Length: 269
Ligand code: ADP
Ligand code: MG
Image 1 (tube, rainbow, N blue to C red):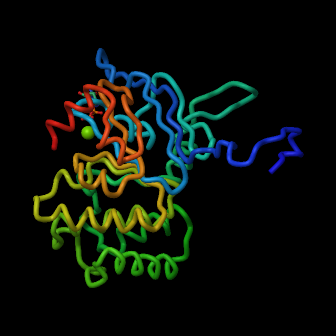
Image 2 (cartoon, rainbow, N blue to C red):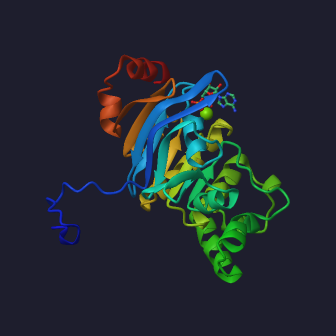
């Protein structure tokens, strides 16, 4: 393909596609603690990227910064090439207003360790609320889509139930369906199985695996090495606020380069 309109001649296969998510040299401090110390990451359309690393290495902070729950102190983040958290006014970058930030956040979904379902709403309402109230999808359409998603996560019989009547694993599957319901550009997961009883972990991992197979772009912070190895396209290892290794999943486990990753895998395996 030649890019004639721009006057550039490009070689097929060498064009760098715009990542869905780019994190470039991001710094985040909490007082004296530097939680992110120049973290960088690119995630392309349809990729599943697992983020691994010891406790305190900045994994949660990274996804929370992307979701704009935390303001960053340096670097930049882009969603589909658009700068996150800022807008350009007369050539100057200004932090986005709350409304502007909400608009950007609508294009991503985050699934937390604690499922955060609204306890006083039915399962169905938990899923349809954002599509209807935030995205302006007609109620009928949102319900039909929610039922489809519930079927996919194996919970179509729970549409009218309240969260307290569900197991933790079922609640997390509802939270995942809720995340998908807004058709986000990217799904962020922060240790989605860490709060679950061990016997409930598998059903949630299966749901995520199935989701990955539908071509969703996903970033998953996880301690589940088997999941990372089998489901992720790429694995990222973080330590002390930096991305230390970023490799195809099979290489990551077969041939870890850094001593720290080797030690981590030896400890965790
Ligand atoms: P991980 O998710 O990899 O366990 P975190 O991103 O939660 O790591 O934390 C990275 C570092 O930032 C840790 O030292 C943690 O104590 C610190 N940290 C995270 N959130 C806050 C906060 N809200 N206030 C103060 N320190 C924080
Ligand atoms: Mg964490």
